[in-house]
Image 1 (spheres, rainbow, N blue to C red):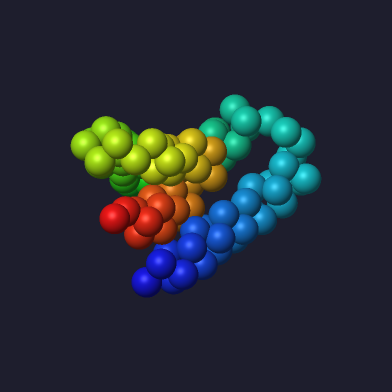
Image 2 (tube, helix red, strand yellow):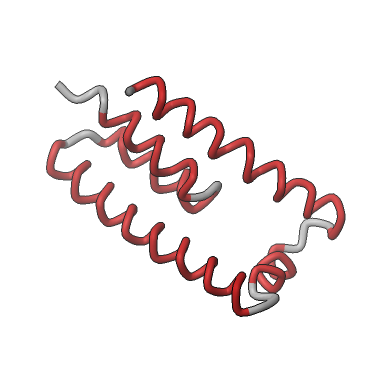
Length: 101
């Protein structure tokens, strides 16, 4: 499973980032413009909130598990989650957990 988690983390990095890069090319590096685009309608706002709640939940899980097991490398999943997305952060965390003894 370790390599599946890693593959999903890589895919979860490349695929979403390709969309973000395309948006930045078309609109310039305008983070507030991107946030506004995420809330273009009720459906996309719902998806943003769904992912936000999932990211917060994942962050709490990562913090609790990293502190409990004293596996600080697992904390890398937090910036991955908020810098790239849950699609990277969750499989990265699961990959990092496979190294526990």
